[in-house]
Image (cartoon, rainbow, N blue to C red; front, side, top):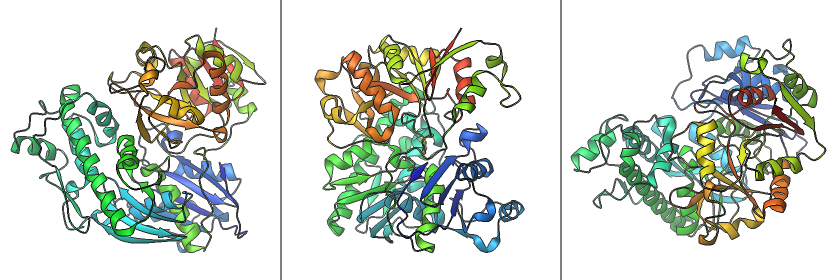
Length: 545
């Protein structure tokens, strides 16, 4: 849960939710924000529901549907699903309290209104919004957002930056939701593009790719028509040159776009949103290769941020509330009490029905006044720890509250973690989580990276010390941690005291193909089913007997 100063003492309650993949709910109420993705609750990856997340948020804030003043929804389609309004009315919603908001505008609200900036450029790039939007540009000042450009809605959606990246991801044999694999694979590839540019940009910053055909065949046709040897399509690792090409091309076109927008508007601050900006390599290059001085990217810059963007739109645009909600952390889920943790550990079936994997095992546990001391020692010994603390993170990244942690060296630690627990492709890297005050000692970076959305080169002198958290090209998609991150900050401090290193390997607390764990029950199931050595639930250390 996130709290902010409600200067207007305006107690309006606004619910935001969305339809389509990565659905969920967010509620702003009495100076508090709660938000969660549906998949965390129904345990279905990329879930398209919103009912469980709605009632989760209502319960967290101790309010009812009747207490809500406005419901705000969005979709990336022009129309809402059949029976959508009927379903809402059956839950107690009133039609006159319901509005919709444009998909890209919702993204813009989720970035700018959570940023610390008064005036900013806002750029939204994703696969698809309403009216065939794939790129949208805004100027934001105080609490007003004005659209100043974007793509031509009459051109094919497959010519947008996001859809082009998805098409090359498909070339590699993966779905649109697996674009992160393409970014990881790109580091292994070489430039086989023969100097051919994929994108063109007009004077008014309209962008078009040279792809023809649809999502499934665009990249395949492009490679064939230009005699580019990216390997046989749908071959995974063997398509590394295709991954290199599309990564290189989106970096170049986005840098060109930002430079042009800066030249026109001369605004030093930049807010980014849309799934394309999960690409931390692009984000770091914006800082390094454009005049932009400050950027803000919310942890939920993909469609997991739509519910929050919708709620912000209603709260600010419809009820006249000021821009005073600057996001200070990503932990927008609810807290879990000790009693809930004990019920799960002691396997109280009448409260938490548990699968055989949990019922068949015996667990030991102990509560610590300072959980970081025993855990830091276990990590330094090479153990793998499931780390569950407080409220869950919003967005697709594990940011120190629902994480699997282990030591950052030697390099084989990532292979051990992959073999025992994560079961992922070998070319996908794990992430470093580091104390903010030491980031520049270990990486080529001077700005904070609180939401794991910047990729930076490792300092040459530190490669051996943190080899398990570095990619093939010696980069890391790092998260920088401050006191506002809670106990993960204290754990890193304690680990540094023991090991001399302010860095741990951090990966999301889930198995391959599953959502990140939300509840103590989810964590116990994951712990029982996998070869995690120890589990931490808030202040409780748990082990298998």
